Image 1: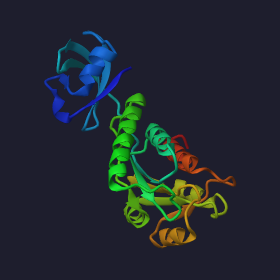
Image 2 (image 1 turned 180 degrees about the vertical axis):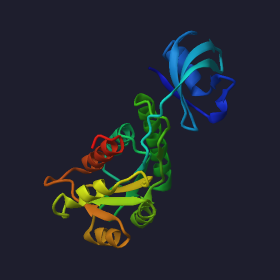
Image 3 (image 1 turned 180 degrees about the horizontal axis):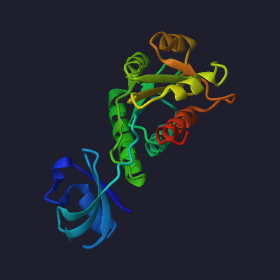
Image 4 (image 1 turned 45 degrees about the vertical axis):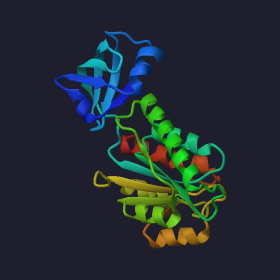
Length: 247
């Protein structure tokens, strides 16, 4: 089903008005017609099944058929992702959004190879945000996860440490007991979780030491060394299943 996001004020009197670039997409790309059904999410994280009433030059008017159950997790997952090389960040963001991440923040660490000036960073973040929006539509999220500005490791560490829980997967952390205990300790009171993932080359030992001192828990993801584009998605998958009651 085609999925669109609108501001909260677009909903009124049992109807929702779609404006902006989505009008052209509905009208010319999808060639939708009056009577067809679509899913619309508002900025207040409400999901509605709607039927198109009219398609005009600058707006699409739809009537609300029913309110749908939210597809969001009961916990906000924030992925602090060490900047990878090439276009890996695009793939990471797409999959993180599908797995339920609330926010993805790119991080420059000691081992980060990629260097972005202000102009390149602005263009990259805009591109990444567009990918997040597309992934949110495809996976029928109730909101569009936000892609933050590039943070330094110290900034990311402070932001993660301020959350209810914060983990830093580390290849030198032995055994699965740490992640097992962390997952078991999660309860309804935990509303925010920060996950710090290193770039290619991983975290520097000094960074891990600082994380531990800040209250961020190092955890192991198993005996195998995971790539930077795999590690975050592995832990997001665990948290998604845990939050949705799979175990």
